[in-house]
Image (cartoon, rainbow, N blue to C red; front, side, top):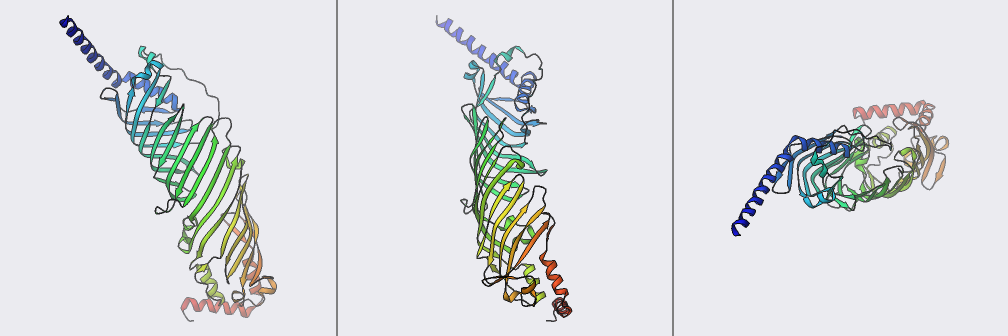
Length: 437
Protein backbone atom coordinates (compact mmCIF):
# COMPACT_ATOMS: atom_id res chain seq x y z
CA UNK A 1 0.00 0.00 0.00
CA UNK A 2 2.85 2.35 0.86
CA UNK A 3 4.51 1.60 -2.46
CA UNK A 4 1.21 2.32 -4.26
CA UNK A 5 0.93 5.68 -2.48
CA UNK A 6 4.49 6.55 -3.38
CA UNK A 7 3.82 5.57 -6.97
CA UNK A 8 0.70 7.73 -7.13
CA UNK A 9 2.64 10.66 -5.63
CA UNK A 10 5.40 10.20 -8.18
CA UNK A 11 2.84 10.12 -10.99
CA UNK A 12 1.15 13.29 -9.69
CA UNK A 13 4.46 15.11 -9.32
CA UNK A 14 5.55 13.97 -12.75
CA UNK A 15 2.27 15.02 -14.30
CA UNK A 16 2.52 18.39 -12.55
CA UNK A 17 6.04 18.90 -13.86
CA UNK A 18 4.93 17.98 -17.38
CA UNK A 19 1.89 20.25 -17.18
CA UNK A 20 4.01 23.06 -15.73
CA UNK A 21 6.52 22.63 -18.55
CA UNK A 22 3.76 22.66 -21.16
CA UNK A 23 2.16 25.76 -19.62
CA UNK A 24 5.52 27.53 -19.74
CA UNK A 25 5.90 26.63 -23.42
CA UNK A 26 2.29 27.60 -24.08
CA UNK A 27 2.59 31.05 -22.44
CA UNK A 28 5.87 31.78 -24.19
CA UNK A 29 4.62 30.47 -27.52
CA UNK A 30 3.39 32.50 -30.51
CA UNK A 31 -0.19 31.17 -30.39
CA UNK A 32 -0.91 32.49 -26.90
CA UNK A 33 0.84 35.80 -27.58
CA UNK A 34 -1.01 36.34 -30.86
CA UNK A 35 -4.34 35.79 -29.16
CA UNK A 36 -3.34 38.06 -26.27
CA UNK A 37 -2.31 40.76 -28.75
CA UNK A 38 -5.57 40.37 -30.66
CA UNK A 39 -7.84 40.44 -27.60
CA UNK A 40 -6.00 43.44 -26.13
CA UNK A 41 -6.27 45.22 -29.47
CA UNK A 42 -10.00 44.59 -29.51
CA UNK A 43 -10.45 45.77 -25.92
CA UNK A 44 -8.33 48.93 -26.17
CA UNK A 45 -9.20 49.70 -29.83
CA UNK A 46 -5.57 49.87 -30.93
CA UNK A 47 -2.81 47.70 -32.37
CA UNK A 48 -1.35 45.88 -29.35
CA UNK A 49 1.93 44.06 -29.17
CA UNK A 50 3.43 42.45 -26.08
CA UNK A 51 7.06 41.61 -25.65
CA UNK A 52 7.94 37.98 -25.08
CA UNK A 53 6.09 36.64 -22.01
CA UNK A 54 7.94 34.83 -19.24
CA UNK A 55 6.72 32.91 -16.22
CA UNK A 56 8.10 33.97 -12.84
CA UNK A 57 7.55 31.33 -10.18
CA UNK A 58 4.26 29.44 -10.33
CA UNK A 59 1.77 32.22 -11.13
CA UNK A 60 4.01 35.20 -11.94
CA UNK A 61 4.19 36.74 -15.43
CA UNK A 62 6.71 39.25 -16.78
CA UNK A 63 7.38 40.98 -20.07
CA UNK A 64 9.84 43.71 -20.90
CA UNK A 65 7.44 45.88 -22.84
CA UNK A 66 4.02 46.56 -24.30
CA UNK A 67 3.38 48.77 -27.33
CA UNK A 68 -0.01 49.96 -28.51
CA UNK A 69 -0.38 52.17 -31.57
CA UNK A 70 -2.91 53.61 -34.04
CA UNK A 71 -5.74 53.77 -31.52
CA UNK A 72 -9.04 55.03 -32.92
CA UNK A 73 -10.81 55.64 -29.59
CA UNK A 74 -9.71 57.40 -26.40
CA UNK A 75 -6.22 55.85 -26.35
CA UNK A 76 -4.06 56.75 -29.37
CA UNK A 77 -0.79 55.17 -28.22
CA UNK A 78 0.22 53.23 -25.12
CA UNK A 79 3.72 52.12 -24.14
CA UNK A 80 4.87 50.37 -20.98
CA UNK A 81 8.17 48.89 -19.83
CA UNK A 82 9.13 46.21 -17.32
CA UNK A 83 5.66 44.77 -16.63
CA UNK A 84 5.06 42.14 -13.99
CA UNK A 85 2.02 40.64 -12.27
CA UNK A 86 0.66 37.60 -10.44
CA UNK A 87 -2.03 35.47 -12.09
CA UNK A 88 -4.85 34.31 -9.81
CA UNK A 89 -6.00 30.89 -11.17
CA UNK A 90 -9.27 30.87 -9.22
CA UNK A 91 -10.83 33.31 -11.66
CA UNK A 92 -10.60 30.82 -14.54
CA UNK A 93 -13.62 28.97 -13.14
CA UNK A 94 -15.73 32.11 -13.64
CA UNK A 95 -14.08 32.87 -17.00
CA UNK A 96 -12.27 35.97 -15.91
CA UNK A 97 -8.59 36.46 -15.41
CA UNK A 98 -7.44 38.25 -12.31
CA UNK A 99 -3.98 39.82 -12.35
CA UNK A 100 -2.88 40.84 -8.87
CA UNK A 101 -0.15 43.34 -7.97
CA UNK A 102 0.60 44.44 -11.53
CA UNK A 103 3.66 46.67 -11.56
CA UNK A 104 5.04 48.84 -14.37
CA UNK A 105 8.38 50.55 -14.10
CA UNK A 106 7.31 53.22 -16.58
CA UNK A 107 4.53 53.92 -19.04
CA UNK A 108 3.17 56.56 -21.37
CA UNK A 109 -0.32 56.99 -22.85
CA UNK A 110 -1.52 59.49 -25.47
CA UNK A 111 -5.22 60.33 -25.24
CA UNK A 112 -7.61 62.03 -27.62
CA UNK A 113 -11.14 63.38 -27.61
CA UNK A 114 -13.61 60.87 -29.06
CA UNK A 115 -17.10 61.11 -30.43
CA UNK A 116 -19.84 58.62 -29.71
CA UNK A 117 -20.32 56.47 -32.82
CA UNK A 118 -21.68 52.97 -33.34
CA UNK A 119 -18.94 50.48 -34.17
CA UNK A 120 -19.02 47.20 -36.02
CA UNK A 121 -17.21 44.14 -34.79
CA UNK A 122 -14.60 42.61 -37.03
CA UNK A 123 -14.25 38.91 -37.65
CA UNK A 124 -11.42 37.01 -35.96
CA UNK A 125 -9.70 33.73 -36.77
CA UNK A 126 -11.19 30.63 -35.19
CA UNK A 127 -9.58 30.30 -31.74
CA UNK A 128 -7.65 27.24 -30.55
CA UNK A 129 -9.22 24.78 -28.09
CA UNK A 130 -7.66 26.46 -25.09
CA UNK A 131 -9.62 29.63 -25.88
CA UNK A 132 -12.42 27.86 -23.98
CA UNK A 133 -10.66 29.21 -20.90
CA UNK A 134 -10.10 32.64 -22.41
CA UNK A 135 -11.71 35.30 -20.19
CA UNK A 136 -14.63 37.46 -21.11
CA UNK A 137 -13.18 39.95 -18.62
CA UNK A 138 -9.69 40.75 -17.35
CA UNK A 139 -9.74 41.89 -13.73
CA UNK A 140 -6.79 43.95 -12.53
CA UNK A 141 -6.69 43.85 -8.74
CA UNK A 142 -4.07 46.59 -8.42
CA UNK A 143 -1.79 48.36 -10.87
CA UNK A 144 1.15 50.57 -9.93
CA UNK A 145 3.20 52.62 -12.40
CA UNK A 146 6.37 54.16 -10.98
CA UNK A 147 6.79 56.71 -13.75
CA UNK A 148 3.70 57.46 -15.85
CA UNK A 149 3.09 60.01 -18.60
CA UNK A 150 -0.57 60.80 -19.37
CA UNK A 151 -0.60 62.94 -22.50
CA UNK A 152 -2.96 64.61 -24.98
CA UNK A 153 -2.84 67.24 -27.72
CA UNK A 154 -3.87 70.85 -27.11
CA UNK A 155 -3.47 73.42 -29.87
CA UNK A 156 -1.59 70.71 -31.78
CA UNK A 157 1.05 70.57 -29.04
CA UNK A 158 1.78 67.81 -26.56
CA UNK A 159 0.31 68.44 -23.12
CA UNK A 160 -0.27 66.37 -20.02
CA UNK A 161 1.06 64.92 -16.79
CA UNK A 162 4.69 63.79 -16.77
CA UNK A 163 6.55 61.51 -14.39
CA UNK A 164 3.75 60.83 -11.92
CA UNK A 165 3.34 57.81 -9.65
CA UNK A 166 0.04 56.26 -10.72
CA UNK A 167 -2.01 53.60 -8.94
CA UNK A 168 -5.11 52.03 -10.48
CA UNK A 169 -7.49 50.06 -8.27
CA UNK A 170 -10.83 48.42 -9.06
CA UNK A 171 -14.08 49.89 -7.81
CA UNK A 172 -16.56 47.10 -8.44
CA UNK A 173 -16.60 46.93 -12.26
CA UNK A 174 -14.93 50.32 -12.62
CA UNK A 175 -11.53 51.78 -11.78
CA UNK A 176 -10.10 54.54 -9.64
CA UNK A 177 -6.97 56.40 -10.66
CA UNK A 178 -4.75 57.97 -8.01
CA UNK A 179 -1.66 59.99 -8.97
CA UNK A 180 0.97 61.75 -6.86
CA UNK A 181 3.93 63.84 -7.96
CA UNK A 182 5.13 64.73 -11.42
CA UNK A 183 4.60 67.80 -13.58
CA UNK A 184 1.56 69.24 -15.34
CA UNK A 185 2.30 71.13 -18.56
CA UNK A 186 0.17 72.71 -21.29
CA UNK A 187 0.91 75.35 -23.96
CA UNK A 188 -1.57 77.75 -22.31
CA UNK A 189 -0.06 77.56 -18.82
CA UNK A 190 3.28 77.40 -17.03
CA UNK A 191 4.56 74.04 -15.79
CA UNK A 192 3.07 73.20 -12.37
CA UNK A 193 3.68 70.46 -9.80
CA UNK A 194 1.02 67.77 -9.60
CA UNK A 195 0.31 67.33 -5.89
CA UNK A 196 -2.55 64.83 -6.14
CA UNK A 197 -5.17 63.65 -8.62
CA UNK A 198 -8.00 61.23 -7.92
CA UNK A 199 -10.35 60.14 -10.69
CA UNK A 200 -13.12 57.53 -10.76
CA UNK A 201 -14.35 56.34 -14.14
CA UNK A 202 -17.82 54.91 -13.58
CA UNK A 203 -19.56 54.81 -16.89
CA UNK A 204 -21.26 56.74 -18.19
CA UNK A 205 -19.33 59.50 -16.33
CA UNK A 206 -15.87 60.44 -15.14
CA UNK A 207 -15.66 61.89 -11.63
CA UNK A 208 -12.69 63.94 -10.46
CA UNK A 209 -12.86 64.35 -6.68
CA UNK A 210 -9.48 66.09 -6.42
CA UNK A 211 -6.98 67.59 -8.81
CA UNK A 212 -4.36 69.76 -7.10
CA UNK A 213 -1.58 71.69 -8.82
CA UNK A 214 1.02 73.82 -7.05
CA UNK A 215 3.76 76.27 -8.02
CA UNK A 216 5.42 76.31 -4.58
CA UNK A 217 6.98 73.06 -3.36
CA UNK A 218 7.40 74.51 0.15
CA UNK A 219 3.66 75.33 0.32
CA UNK A 220 1.78 72.73 -1.73
CA UNK A 221 -1.50 74.01 -0.30
CA UNK A 222 -1.07 77.08 -2.54
CA UNK A 223 -2.01 76.68 -6.17
CA UNK A 224 -4.98 75.39 -8.13
CA UNK A 225 -7.62 72.89 -7.03
CA UNK A 226 -10.27 71.47 -9.38
CA UNK A 227 -13.21 69.11 -8.92
CA UNK A 228 -15.86 68.05 -11.41
CA UNK A 229 -17.37 65.38 -13.61
CA UNK A 230 -17.77 64.72 -17.33
CA UNK A 231 -19.95 62.45 -19.47
CA UNK A 232 -18.25 59.72 -21.49
CA UNK A 233 -21.07 58.40 -23.66
CA UNK A 234 -24.19 60.02 -25.16
CA UNK A 235 -24.22 62.61 -22.40
CA UNK A 236 -21.01 64.63 -22.81
CA UNK A 237 -21.85 67.34 -20.30
CA UNK A 238 -19.10 68.81 -18.10
CA UNK A 239 -19.24 70.36 -14.64
CA UNK A 240 -16.06 71.94 -13.29
CA UNK A 241 -15.14 74.06 -10.28
CA UNK A 242 -11.67 75.62 -10.03
CA UNK A 243 -10.30 77.36 -6.93
CA UNK A 244 -7.09 79.42 -6.93
CA UNK A 245 -5.16 80.03 -3.73
CA UNK A 246 -2.06 82.25 -3.75
CA UNK A 247 -1.01 81.21 -7.25
CA UNK A 248 2.04 83.18 -8.41
CA UNK A 249 1.12 85.61 -11.18
CA UNK A 250 4.49 86.10 -12.91
CA UNK A 251 4.68 82.72 -14.71
CA UNK A 252 1.30 83.40 -16.37
CA UNK A 253 2.24 86.71 -18.05
CA UNK A 254 4.26 87.00 -21.28
CA UNK A 255 7.90 86.05 -20.76
CA UNK A 256 9.29 89.56 -21.35
CA UNK A 257 7.23 90.91 -18.41
CA UNK A 258 7.80 88.14 -15.86
CA UNK A 259 10.71 89.85 -14.12
CA UNK A 260 8.61 93.01 -13.76
CA UNK A 261 5.52 91.46 -12.12
CA UNK A 262 4.92 90.09 -8.63
CA UNK A 263 1.83 89.01 -6.74
CA UNK A 264 -0.33 85.99 -5.90
CA UNK A 265 -3.73 85.31 -7.40
CA UNK A 266 -6.75 83.85 -5.64
CA UNK A 267 -10.29 83.28 -6.84
CA UNK A 268 -12.68 80.74 -8.28
CA UNK A 269 -14.32 79.74 -11.56
CA UNK A 270 -17.42 77.57 -12.10
CA UNK A 271 -17.96 76.03 -15.53
CA UNK A 272 -20.72 73.94 -17.13
CA UNK A 273 -21.04 72.64 -20.67
CA UNK A 274 -23.43 70.43 -22.62
CA UNK A 275 -20.50 68.95 -24.55
CA UNK A 276 -16.73 68.74 -24.32
CA UNK A 277 -16.33 71.59 -26.81
CA UNK A 278 -15.65 75.00 -25.27
CA UNK A 279 -18.15 76.60 -27.64
CA UNK A 280 -21.03 74.97 -25.71
CA UNK A 281 -19.83 76.00 -22.27
CA UNK A 282 -20.42 78.90 -19.94
CA UNK A 283 -18.76 79.89 -16.71
CA UNK A 284 -18.41 82.63 -14.15
CA UNK A 285 -15.75 83.51 -11.62
CA UNK A 286 -13.63 86.16 -10.04
CA UNK A 287 -9.93 86.71 -9.46
CA UNK A 288 -7.89 89.04 -7.28
CA UNK A 289 -4.17 89.63 -6.82
CA UNK A 290 -2.64 90.17 -3.40
CA UNK A 291 0.66 92.04 -2.90
CA UNK A 292 0.75 92.95 -6.59
CA UNK A 293 3.82 94.84 -7.74
CA UNK A 294 4.86 96.32 -11.10
CA UNK A 295 8.62 96.66 -10.94
CA UNK A 296 10.80 98.72 -13.31
CA UNK A 297 8.39 98.62 -16.24
CA UNK A 298 10.22 99.83 -19.38
CA UNK A 299 7.06 101.62 -20.56
CA UNK A 300 6.87 103.60 -17.31
CA UNK A 301 10.54 104.61 -17.58
CA UNK A 302 10.05 105.65 -21.21
CA UNK A 303 6.97 107.70 -20.33
CA UNK A 304 8.84 109.48 -17.53
CA UNK A 305 11.89 110.15 -19.71
CA UNK A 306 9.82 111.40 -22.65
CA UNK A 307 7.44 113.65 -20.72
CA UNK A 308 9.58 114.75 -17.79
CA UNK A 309 7.10 113.17 -15.37
CA UNK A 310 8.21 111.56 -12.10
CA UNK A 311 9.52 108.04 -12.52
CA UNK A 312 7.06 105.84 -10.56
CA UNK A 313 9.73 103.16 -10.01
CA UNK A 314 8.30 100.15 -8.19
CA UNK A 315 4.51 100.40 -8.19
CA UNK A 316 2.67 98.53 -5.42
CA UNK A 317 -0.92 97.78 -6.40
CA UNK A 318 -3.49 98.89 -3.87
CA UNK A 319 -6.12 96.75 -5.58
CA UNK A 320 -6.15 94.35 -8.54
CA UNK A 321 -9.31 92.36 -9.22
CA UNK A 322 -11.87 91.46 -11.88
CA UNK A 323 -14.84 89.22 -12.69
CA UNK A 324 -14.43 86.63 -15.44
CA UNK A 325 -17.19 85.23 -17.68
CA UNK A 326 -17.08 82.59 -20.40
CA UNK A 327 -19.92 82.00 -22.85
CA UNK A 328 -20.01 80.26 -26.23
CA UNK A 329 -16.26 80.57 -26.75
CA UNK A 330 -16.06 84.25 -25.73
CA UNK A 331 -14.33 85.46 -22.57
CA UNK A 332 -15.22 88.71 -20.84
CA UNK A 333 -13.24 90.37 -18.07
CA UNK A 334 -15.57 92.76 -16.28
CA UNK A 335 -15.52 95.02 -13.25
CA UNK A 336 -11.79 95.46 -13.73
CA UNK A 337 -10.24 97.46 -10.91
CA UNK A 338 -6.50 98.13 -10.74
CA UNK A 339 -4.94 100.95 -8.76
CA UNK A 340 -1.47 102.11 -7.80
CA UNK A 341 -1.97 104.81 -5.18
CA UNK A 342 -1.00 108.32 -6.34
CA UNK A 343 -0.04 107.10 -9.82
CA UNK A 344 -2.92 105.50 -11.81
CA UNK A 345 -6.30 103.81 -11.58
CA UNK A 346 -7.96 101.52 -14.18
CA UNK A 347 -11.58 100.33 -14.35
CA UNK A 348 -13.78 98.85 -17.07
CA UNK A 349 -14.38 95.71 -19.13
CA UNK A 350 -12.76 93.90 -22.08
CA UNK A 351 -14.15 91.03 -24.21
CA UNK A 352 -12.39 88.58 -26.52
CA UNK A 353 -15.00 87.04 -28.84
CA UNK A 354 -14.93 83.46 -30.11
CA UNK A 355 -13.30 84.70 -33.34
CA UNK A 356 -10.54 86.41 -31.24
CA UNK A 357 -11.76 89.95 -31.98
CA UNK A 358 -11.25 92.43 -29.15
CA UNK A 359 -13.74 94.96 -27.81
CA UNK A 360 -14.48 96.93 -24.67
CA UNK A 361 -13.56 100.14 -22.91
CA UNK A 362 -11.76 101.11 -19.73
CA UNK A 363 -11.43 104.27 -17.73
CA UNK A 364 -7.75 105.15 -17.26
CA UNK A 365 -6.87 107.75 -14.65
CA UNK A 366 -3.56 109.50 -13.94
CA UNK A 367 -2.66 111.89 -11.14
CA UNK A 368 -1.66 115.50 -11.74
CA UNK A 369 2.17 114.99 -11.76
CA UNK A 370 1.87 112.65 -14.74
CA UNK A 371 -0.24 115.03 -16.85
CA UNK A 372 1.57 118.36 -16.37
CA UNK A 373 3.60 117.91 -19.53
CA UNK A 374 0.40 117.98 -21.65
CA UNK A 375 -1.14 121.35 -20.88
CA UNK A 376 -4.38 120.66 -22.75
CA UNK A 377 -4.64 117.04 -21.64
CA UNK A 378 -7.17 117.62 -18.85
CA UNK A 379 -9.50 119.63 -21.06
CA UNK A 380 -9.21 117.51 -24.24
CA UNK A 381 -8.58 113.91 -23.14
CA UNK A 382 -8.50 113.33 -19.36
CA UNK A 383 -11.75 115.17 -18.84
CA UNK A 384 -13.36 113.38 -15.86
CA UNK A 385 -12.09 113.94 -12.33
CA UNK A 386 -12.55 111.55 -9.43
CA UNK A 387 -10.49 111.97 -6.30
CA UNK A 388 -6.85 112.56 -7.23
CA UNK A 389 -7.28 111.00 -10.69
CA UNK A 390 -8.11 112.54 -14.07
CA UNK A 391 -9.75 109.93 -16.32
CA UNK A 392 -9.77 109.26 -20.05
CA UNK A 393 -11.91 106.62 -21.76
CA UNK A 394 -9.96 104.07 -23.84
CA UNK A 395 -11.74 102.04 -26.53
CA UNK A 396 -10.29 98.69 -27.61
CA UNK A 397 -10.52 96.96 -30.98
CA UNK A 398 -8.47 94.67 -33.22
CA UNK A 399 -7.72 91.12 -32.12
CA UNK A 400 -6.22 89.41 -29.10
CA UNK A 401 -2.97 88.99 -31.05
CA UNK A 402 -2.98 92.54 -32.43
CA UNK A 403 -4.89 94.77 -30.01
CA UNK A 404 -5.69 98.38 -30.84
CA UNK A 405 -6.62 101.31 -28.59
CA UNK A 406 -7.44 104.94 -29.31
CA UNK A 407 -5.73 106.79 -26.42
CA UNK A 408 -2.27 107.02 -27.99
CA UNK A 409 -3.77 108.42 -31.21
CA UNK A 410 -5.64 111.12 -29.31
CA UNK A 411 -2.54 112.07 -27.32
CA UNK A 412 -0.46 112.21 -30.53
CA UNK A 413 -3.05 114.46 -32.14
CA UNK A 414 -3.04 116.75 -29.12
CA UNK A 415 0.77 116.93 -29.10
CA UNK A 416 0.68 117.72 -32.82
CA UNK A 417 -1.26 120.89 -32.10
CA UNK A 418 1.77 122.33 -30.23
CA UNK A 419 5.02 122.49 -32.28
CA UNK A 420 6.88 123.77 -29.21
CA UNK A 421 5.82 120.71 -27.20
CA UNK A 422 6.83 118.43 -30.06
CA UNK A 423 10.30 119.99 -30.17
CA UNK A 424 10.68 119.77 -26.40
CA UNK A 425 9.74 116.09 -26.39
CA UNK A 426 12.09 115.42 -29.29
CA UNK A 427 15.13 117.06 -27.70
CA UNK A 428 14.36 115.55 -24.29
CA UNK A 429 14.38 112.13 -25.92
CA UNK A 430 17.61 112.84 -27.82
CA UNK A 431 19.16 113.99 -24.57
CA UNK A 432 18.26 110.69 -22.96
CA UNK A 433 19.84 108.76 -25.83
CA UNK A 434 23.14 110.65 -25.57
CA UNK A 435 22.99 111.26 -21.79
CA UNK A 436 23.00 115.04 -22.28
CA UNK A 437 20.62 115.51 -19.34
